[in-house]
Image 1: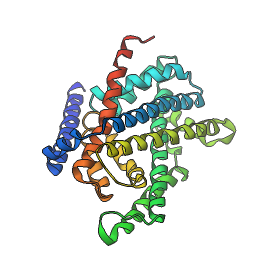
Image 2: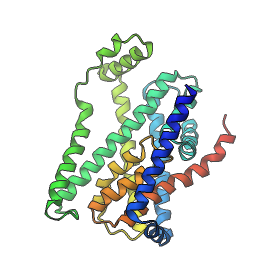
Image 3: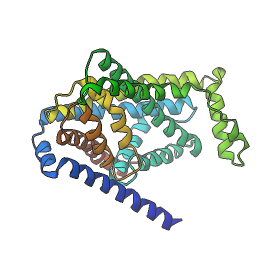
Length: 313
């Protein structure tokens, strides 16, 4: 078991390094260094402020989700838990996976069942992904209606429409009647508890759905602030891409950064930024620098939160 975990850890680290090396090869290390060297510090400070506010509200969203599931989840206790998870994400491989595992464990230490604690973290991630898709879908639709085009010539608006359609499919997916009755047939107590949780969510009389929906407002604020931080990271490097296109590009960039490859999303984030922001006319060195600076925002906050490991209650 330990051997398999070490192999998996090595593969994730190797994958992250390989993707980061690929990004450097595509952009050119000298060009990337020159791009980051010209960063406007005052604009980058605004990006940091947006990112800090986004993460504080993310912790409040998680607490709201936990209480909607009848868990003991006081916001004042979950904010430092969330901050420690950011430190874990910065130091350990697996992008957000290590921090999410830490969050679930610490929430269970408050007297909550581990399975329900894990589900609260998973739903917190799902809520963020869904609202991010809604935000990027809305931005892509507005960009298309405003007549904005991509840097791909005559096919730019067609690509933008296809991208918006893909995001639209993701947005409507949670409303489809997914079959979960098969979970009851599995010989696992945890599977049956998950099915029961889902049935409670679908049952309007339980009140869980209504309480969980309250977290969506916080989630939209989180994603607007996060996409705003990404936009300011680009602006600090001189990017002139329209904000609508940057907001539309946020979904694939953030999703790629969350893949359990490498450390803190470095490699996948920058590669996605080059691919997606490049369609908006952003040069490869500026696009990669934008993704890199956004990752540095997380590193700064993870470092600032590290002393919280010394003051656990």
